[in-house]
Amino acid sequence: VSIPAHVYCHEAIEELSSYLDGELTEQRRQAIEHHLHRCPPCEQIASFEVELRRVIADRCQTSVPQDLAARIRAALDGEAGAAR
Ligand SMILES: [Zn+2]
Image (tube, rainbow, N blue to C red; front, side):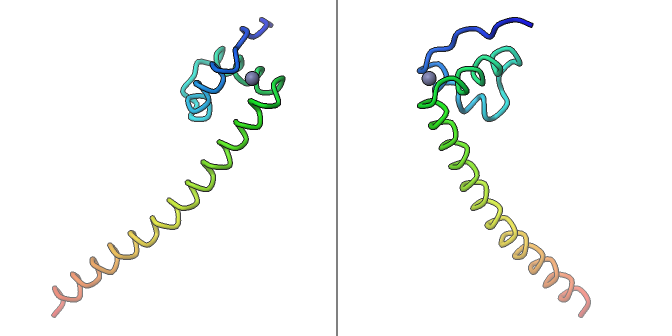
């Protein structure tokens, strides 16, 4: 088991979005995670970012069915027209 590389606060914050997107290497991900667990200010920023993404994801999800419903309605209208 290797000790995670030391991560500075600005590095943790800069790489936070990559960390949350799962775009980091396993080693880098562990290093950031290690920093967040030991650094309350950064952990707070990280949890805020997670919450922010959750809210954005919720908004996107509510807009998708509306679009889908419109497309289904359009498809049904097209079918109804063809049946006539
Ligand atoms: Zn920090």
